[in-house]
Length: 385
Figure (cartoon, rainbow, N blue to C red):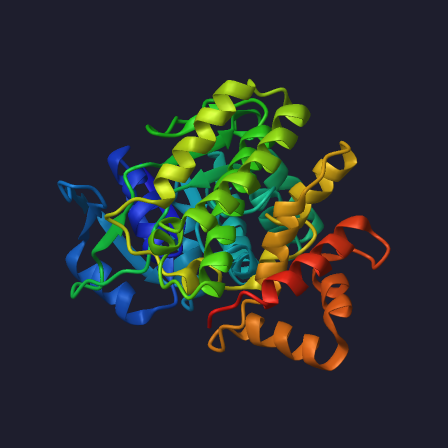
């Protein structure tokens, strides 16, 4: 079996590529980093190390790579693949869509075998978004043919992959925990199950549980940690005040998720406690500026801070700690992050109320907007950077 995976970065190698290789796939990475591509082609293997006491290591074999700028080679790889996956970031999907479309066009004329295309991104409906981007590059005739052969099942993925500090550029360290959930109902009939993947009929509860627990809690720890002068998530979570703040955020999102999806309250409490433990893993040095990067995306109306707050508000729930997380994100003034710099410029030129409405979509009259403003003014007095 052959899989084409877009994104040979740390998540691609340390999570998706690892699981695909374990499941018996020959994995062809597609990336525009020429040196990374050359190394993967030359060695055909790399090492994944777990961030645990034993530093367990696994050699991932039977891999190769193609430069993403070589559309002909990418199309050829897709034409002969049994599976296509991505881990490039939602904002990059539009850039890889043309090459996936070209590969599908070649495949439609060369094979009648069904092809699942799974976007493994931190987003709701990542594969659905990718399908829209890909179909924009197909003719109406090819779209009809693709509808019968190419499936775009949505997925939820979860694994913390910190910044790497290895001499070997291919080696990657990951946390022991992982979760990859795929919408079974959207998979083509007769598909080959991937070992380690959890297939479900209704994906939305799993996506939102993960995004609004792991991603929401992680970024809140990063933003509050940054303001407190912490360098890593682990340092931030060693602060009693920040740990309590993150726990309170997860209580807010947890109450909303239990109400919305009918999760068992005790089971979700256990799940949230496991997430808190993952944030404190002593074998990971995860920098707050890495986790907090791209604050404009994280503050957007459908992302990890605003969306759960709005869902909770619709259910009549108060969200002071989610509001504090948004306020902390607006105070994230890390100068090397272009999005953080853009936020600070907008605040300086037009004021905090304009920034809240611009980035969160919350109008000035919305109660959450006022709550974010109040939290912003209070947090400004505590900044230690």
